[in-house]
Image 1 (tube, protein in one colour):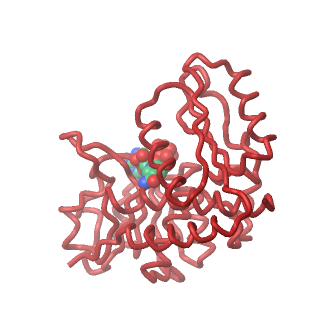
Image 2 (cartoon, rainbow, N blue to C red):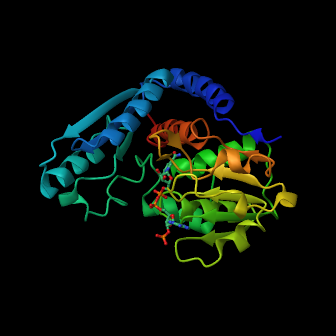
Length: 284
Ligand code: NAP
């Protein structure tokens, strides 16, 4: 039977550690998020992050700008928060409204406060393989590394197939696996015959965003594949689901992350870990 790789035991133990670390600081760490407009999914995500911040004993503030905020107003707000010494961690909740969506937010947040791990100064460490415990890694790939560590999944020499090449998940994920000596294949929307790659994978990490698209046709049963499902989607009944058709593949794989309860909570945990890293970098 398939082993479910659950986030809960990891989150529970790490949250306790973070609480203890926060207590040792002279001042509570402070996290700010900039949200522009009324995106409902964004509000739900922000709420999860707020709760976790409160749980570890950090301050959390939502800077909620109205939908009609201009580019100049938005950029000057981010600049102001970058400069405020009382802000330790800062992130911009995406997506921005249509009239601001052309803005490249990658490098807007000060790299020392960049709890999302998007700034090129932080990405450069992944690219060079220069990773330490104080590197601000992007949250979802970082959470997946925590999962691999917790469940003692050694990927060295293994074939990891990453499906998706976004800057926030797929691309850094593949590089981080390469840094851990995996053999990495990237697949994406232009890849021909994806099944030829996934059937040869020891580990598949799917970050596509299509409900239940990865089914048993993509799996070679004898490989005992490990599946990591990053997707957060809605199925035909509006129920939360991942990229992977859990019921269809569960008898053909060795381990897999459920949705919900897998990668999602680990992403939020990584954000909290990054807040602590950022706060310590700022020597407060
Ligand atoms: P994204 O920017 O939309 O990227 C999706 C990637 O999937 C792209 O690289 C795209 O290829 C590829 N793709 C699309 N259709 C494909 C197909 N039919 N076959 C193979 N590849 C295909 O999305 P993202 O931000 O990386 O997020 C991906 C999913 O993860 C979404 O469901 C998102 O909600 C979820 N997510 C979850 C968490 C979490 O904490 N669990 C965090 C972040 C994101 P091209 O590059 O060729 O277009």
